[in-house]
Length: 308
Image (cartoon, rainbow, N blue to C red; front, side, top):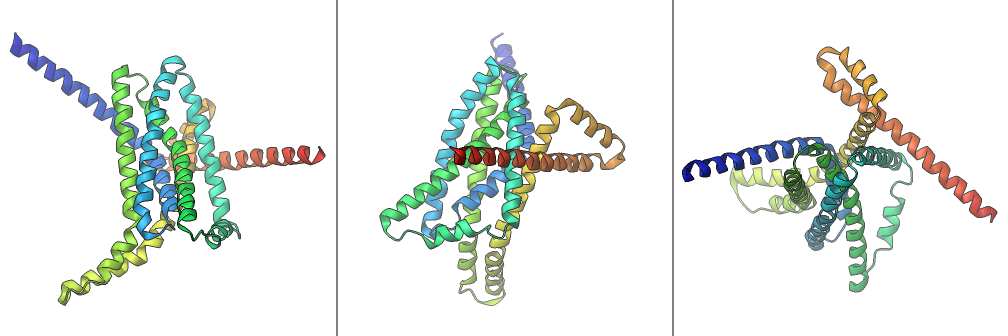
């Protein structure tokens, strides 16, 4: 009897781990697009720092990200218990915000003055140790604030996946996703920001023969690829905003979701590609409309303020 009880316990644990693993995979897949945006945004946040301060900055933001998720996970669980219907509206609100951010990012990329803020900041770069420390703190604070928004998206997506699961599975899955995503994103960020340094080191190798030439060539390739990778990540992150945001918006509005499904049904084997494209278009439109509303609100507030 004791032996059979032990094996029954093992079966229960294995089943629990299978359920958690499955839900974690689904959550990771659904939040992959947000992760690409998270990766691009945070890599951009820490670039431009002094080479010897890049990794300390990444470490500081990593710790801030863990604190963000330590706040968000309990809040998400409480919300799911008290007002589960709000998860859908939070997803929609988050989707609209992502679409708006995507539109603003596109506008900045094509704006003639897109680098004016960065150039001004660089020209006014502090020189004293105290001023440099304050500048670094501002950069870290901005990165952690951005991370909070994107982490909230990831947690809400995961919560939506595990909404029907028992509470203990929700807790374990949310905690697992929070830790894995944070380690994964900031591990990659650390690698990306030091990519050019690794390239320089390889390009200066003193090794002789074919191996030495190959190593130096590879190092030069890394140095050349680093800025291209950063630019590509920036565009991929922006595209991901529209795709993820458009998906949340469409899935939150039943008639719109049904219209998308009807269009996809007539596309044979191209269904997934067409569906993704339609979500991207919906995201772009949602971002444009939101930007108009935000701009109009700002204009009205400015007029009212000047009238006073």
